[in-house]
Length: 89
Image (cartoon, rainbow, N blue to C red):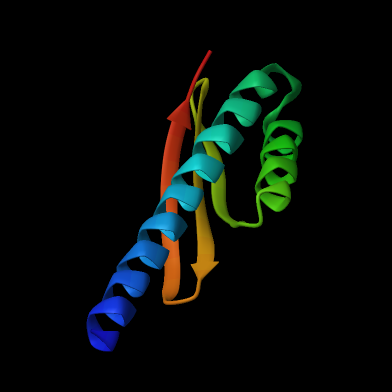
């Protein structure tokens, strides 16, 4: 029973880390897209602000036209999870 409990805890922790990474990437991409008119530096700065508040680490922030593309990672108890998002006007 203990082995099953540890396995379930590990799977749950991995799922939570994946969801946190996905949410951080989504919100950061939206924040960057909202600031796209101010320039890439300002937009990615806003995305970094969001990622920092969510306890994640931004791997990349770039633009493809007006679309913001953000990638983040989140450290979890059983490893790191990554998330990617794209948002535009």
